[in-house]
Length: 421
Image (tube, rainbow, N blue to C red; front, side, top):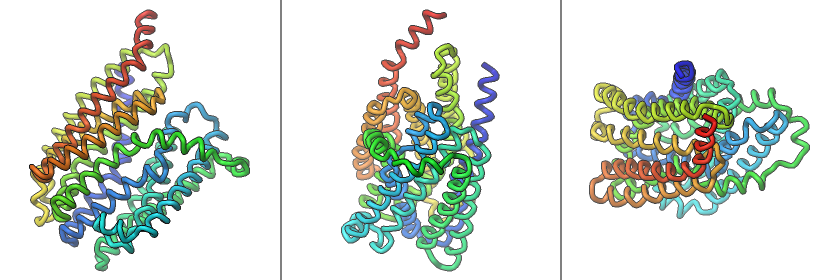
């Protein structure tokens, strides 16, 4: 058991470090942006990136999770065809959203409080994000940690360099958008080049891609893919329309510290999921080890949140400009929301292994719906704190719902394990 925990700890540390390279870039940006932009301008950027994040699973239908489900079942040729089919589907969906954005730019601009001539940048950035995260998922399950790390370094470095250059040359939030798109493009090109050099695409390109098959999976799985992105966007839209863009800027600053905690939690999950899948696939594996590791994770998540909040107290005034100091008291709430999110995605991993797409979608849909309703009334009654509290409640309730779905899928295996024991 000690060796298992040691290996998971080492892998968790690696993925936490790798993910932190991109995830902590908003903190580096915040040092610049909270001093170069007004709260309203920063609120526009926060809303823009939330819309991009929301659109990403719609553009690629979260097929990186289909890759995770079937990765160890596929040989190199099948993986190449899967990658090719995924890229084709993502491109088709992105093209459709670009067309929709151009056609309905005026009403969308009014609804989203963004300039109409910049709306097309949203599906473009979402397409690049979708490709980039698909490449990360492939390298994660292929155990190619070096490329996983390099992709983060290359994309984040390029984004920061171009964003800083444009912002300091008075491009405002427009420069942040352009710089991020350039950085993502660089990361995608490098990752695609590596993938092409590894997989046998020459024969696969002559075969028709499995677009319809992947689309059917993606549409059924869509609520699950939307869970992580719909909630932040819902919160930001509610804050923007009920409280204003300036309050959305404050919400975005508080959320940065929640993101920092999610980096650590996501790093743990990145290391834990391949180990979990390989052990669950082996019916002779010791179920007791799996349970112990899960219990440890449930203890580690909130402890990490407490440590993060302790660090945030002295660090926040240094990183964040004085005009955003109204966000400091919101930071513990944002961190608590991230911890509850960690519980939810921990439970979803067990369903992901079983390919229990419908239960995952139902629990995710309940999370999205609960958050929308609770956040709206929370914003009216308690402002931004009400929205953050609603997110905590929605994730905890949905984690309980997903846990209820887990037991029927694993009950017979637990009985078999006891019989063998």
